[in-house]
Amino acid sequence: MKREGLLYVISAPSGAGKTTLCNAIIDLFSELGQSISFTTRPIRAGEVDGVDYYFVTQDVFKQMIAAEELVEWAQVHGNYYGTALKTLTDARSNGRDVLLDIDFQGALQLKKLDLNVVFIFIAPPSFAVLENRLRGRGTDSAEVISRRIENAAVEMAQARWYDYIIVNGELDQAIAELKAVISAQRCRGDMVFPWIEQQFNVE
Amino acid sequence: MKREGLLYVISAPSGAGKTTLCNAIIDLFSELGQSISFTTRPIRAGEVDGVDYYFVTQDVFKQMIAAEELVEWAQVHGNYYGTALKTLTDARSNGRDVLLDIDFQGALQLKKLDLNVVFIFIAPPSFAVLENRLRGRGTDSAEVISRRIENAAVEMAQARWYDYIIVNGELDQAIAELKAVISAQRCRGDMVFPWIEQQFNVE
Image (tube, rainbow over all chains, first blue to last red; front, side, top):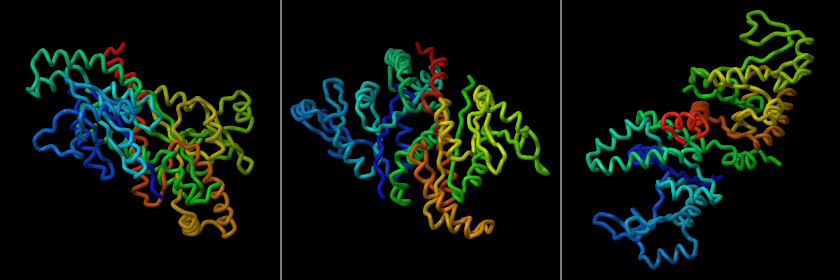
């Protein structure tokens, strides 16, 4: 008996190490894949339509919004990004688990739907560590780093409504915790009981 | 900041491998201990009061029932067995996690209280495997085995209201799953957010 796929939403303040954690965990679970978003931004060299994103025109994207085909979307620097409901329902019915790496606004949009989503928040261990990591990247100006730290201070309050919070101090421990959270979902009563009912003819 | 202790209730049909799993998991988590029950049955050679059980008289036990000091209790072969609320609340406030190995009736009594308990059901992979295991023990008569199988058929329906179901086919995998379930609870939002609030001055 095939189980339903599960949806995992992972959000984090910038610099918490979300991308590294997501990549590590996708390598660990063969049936777990990253959700492919729709976007109106131009395709870049090396990107593949249907792999990196589904690349669509602004008209198509706006039609999808109007038809309520997107469970979450946002406009960033004039380009639209969003997740289609169909992407999620297809994965679920095929027993595939999907990881959605989305920001707090997108996560909140999803939270309002009744989609059996597991919400995971990645937190830095402290503001000091967050600042060090952002500086260490060497990609952002001091001003941008300050703004990211200020944002993080606000974003930490969002952790309140997440199902799980992984504090990413030691990467290996954070990976182990994220792995445990995902493994545990597969043992959830609502995931396993349909199998029990069938196997033991429970009435 | 010290976190609250968590309570784990583990139930299973006879022969599902619960005791082996409980012992394995207690060895894995240093801050996890088995709950010590109160009983009126006579102490046996080698047993220690306050370690194996708290041994009390029937009068004391009945007073505890009357004073509603027990979260669950049962009478088996004329002896009383029960778990004191104080055992659980003390462990919780000391940040110690407690494993309660109790039957479905006891678990249901606990379910009705609001104690932040994680309910875990250990299931055999099939009736055939269950029967083989019960026969393999060599301790029960054919009649007793038949009765245990019949009970199991009824008990499997109880899995419906458990938070997690561990199907114990391969012992190593079942241990890994139980470990993941326990590790995951420590990442639960309600367990970690108080730390986040303090660490990041979340308002």
